[in-house]
Length: 368
Figure 1 (cartoon, rainbow, N blue to C red):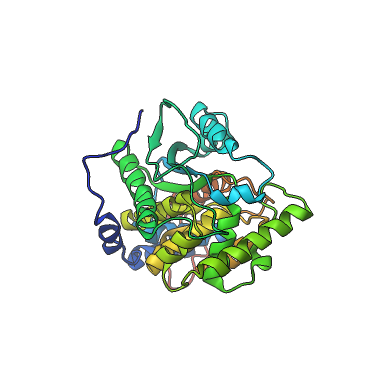
Figure 2 (cartoon, rainbow, N blue to C red; figure 1 turned 120 degrees about the horizontal axis):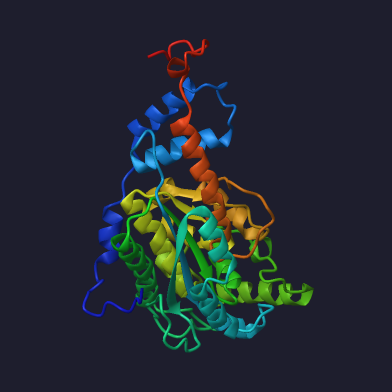
């Protein structure tokens, strides 16, 4: 499927329209799911967090016995001007090379998506290199990469808004192509742990050193360059933590804005959406700054080794499903955790209740 820009469609009010559609999850469906959990043929709480996941997904989907259909992993790609400051172990050209790899089906996210029942949707939000004709690529390039955040803003406020709307457009287009019951937000962009660190530092008030990690695996000198870059970006740009679009425009990235749009669109559609690692969590913070209710539709896929992710998830009130020492990005941890979400719903839906199985010991007050 070839995906190109929808030049005939205005997105002037797309963000506002999406925000207006976000409400609370279905409390009645969640309560009914909780009641069913108490009547299943097992000791209460014996399936641990699988029980909590099933109840959360029931509330999001508005169905006390949710059946998750296909999923979509949204991989947003863009380049960063700050990469020139030596904050990554890889050159900027790797972004475009990996986009081609996604499209060819050769990346880790492709393998895990196939396992977890996801299709992979790739969007060029601002890759600096010419990708040429690429089948299956959604082209929404704001421009070829952001500006260097150590010298000034990453982008204009209008570009920040546009990047968020790119994610909303991608989500809606994929839904029109084929409805799905789960979403995951991933990314590709050499240097993007640096703007993610700046976003998390700005929104949590934590010192840059506490939320900046090694990313692609930089050495000690590279880590010091990253910390210094984040410190300078915050000092030069002074992002306003009460204004998420200001934070995004001052120190963010186009793919980070697009992932924020995916989170908002998922909330508006009442579809569970999995947060991937550190950069995805930074995008989730931007989304929740725009609409705090968006967090109600998020599930944290995994615990990243990047130190800033814990601060981000703490602000979001999310606990990771998996803890496997992953730090790849691309949406890999999110789609892998989706398999656990499916398992939670399967056991919730397919297990018999005490009454159905004729097993004595139904909890008092829970008999039907």
